[in-house]
Amino acid sequence: MNNKNFAGTGILFKLFLHRDRFLLPIWIFLPVVLILIVASTFSSMGGEGLENVLLDFDNDPLVSAILGPVMSFDLTGAIVWRGTSQIALTLGLGSLFTLIRHTRVDEETGRSELIRSYVTGTYASLTAALTLTIIGNLIAGILIAITIIFLGGSITSSLLYAITIVTIGCFFAGISGVAVQLRESSGSDRGISITVLGLGILLSILNNTVGADSFLNWITPMAWQRLTQPFAGDNWIYLIYFIIICALPMIISYVLTARRDLGEGIFIPRSGPKEASPRFSSPLALAWRLQKKNFFGWIIATVLYIVVFAAFSPSLSRTEGMSGWLSNLGGTNWVEDMELGYVFISIGIYLMALFVGIYAITTVFRLKKEENEGRIEMLLDKQVSRTKLMRSHLIVAYLFSATLLLVMGIAGGLAYGIASEDLGGNFGVIFSMSVSKIPPVWIFVGLSALLYGLFPRISEFSWVIWISCSILELTWEAKLIDWSLMSISPYAYAHYTIQITELPYLSLFLLIFISLLFTTIGLLSFKNRNIQTKA
Image (cartoon, rainbow, N blue to C red; front, side):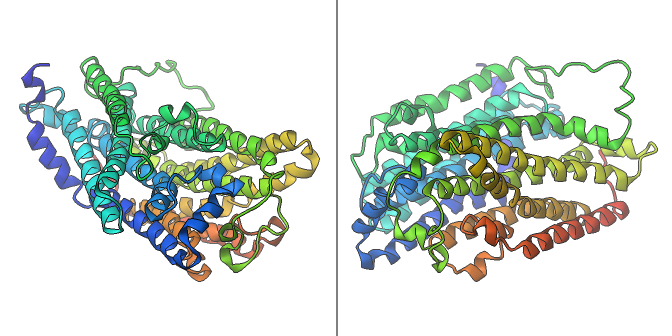
């Protein structure tokens, strides 16, 4: 590689760092918060004997199927066992969003073209974005190590765990680096990256269900801590494998970026017909065309996810034993009248509903992307009203997010019913579990519409709300907050601890009403505000 190809990397790094001065600290410090939450949870159990508590969890078939066996029966072992999946997810999402934001998004908005008009090399933007992301992961790793050492972990094991976590974040930075070379749309690139991230989580869960000691430990980064085994063996040699795996997608991204034009992707989109179909004559048809590829990707991922959960759930219903911690969540024995298989799949449906909230937000924000790229201005110059244009995207967001949950209910119900050999008795229950999550997801459609229409500059605050709901769930499960605080989250009203026959239907209908109210305010605000242009 010629040094000229890297010209301007340092200046771009400073620019990217300045642009991310508020967002970068969020995903860097969040793992520390998660560690402290987990530590507080298990420290409060010390009176019962932490080792006995962890043994109880380890013998619980449901908990082991989700999180895998405990590797070390002490506080540091509890952190690795309980906190790794959330920490890996945080750094994975932070890495992929950061890298795509400073590469493909800049190409879409025309900033990269402006930057390239100066003395800037071909690899400068990619290198600066990768450097920023890697440094972010390294800082997060240092903070993780310091936090665990402060909590009593040994220095060497803490460092090994931190480096393992850093390699997970860097791996997804590399995956995103490859993704931005493939497609010319940042939405497609995010979809590819998040799909790989979701596949990693799915494989990790599958690995846990078979005892967490399979070849999947080598394939999914979400299970790499089971190879290095910090605080339970300290196998440093596996870090060499992790570094190689992290470097491969980064190297591939450099090779690909030299083989494409600025703003283009390796896979050139197919040209459409010379004349549009008569059906393609409305804003709703345009919204469908823009969203359908992403939607079908989510459909496939959702079906694969729920089928895996549903296939294993009936076998759990024939096992015995469940930890008192899980069965007494919320202060009630909510699993008393439920089979263990129902408990397992209801948690799986709940987790997927959280991710469908992400889909709802990104679907609404596709309109914001169209505005940033100047295409909305061209549409409004024709005989298209603002209200009709935004309403079309919101209709798609409402329908598609609901469809994802309906499909999940159908696929999960069929898979569970077939696996349990009682399709008629189980299908309706599983389907109802999934349908009940529609109102909470729709809240995020309405919230995103409200912020985009009223406060477009801070519309990303929707992500903060979603993350806050996820943290509320984690802290409630850790018994650090009570249900009165947990009820702030819209997901609390269709929670997995609530029996289908006891759902608060009035509250769920109220969530739908609030979502529609937010949407109406957003539509009216969008009608009267200025449209961003490229001029």
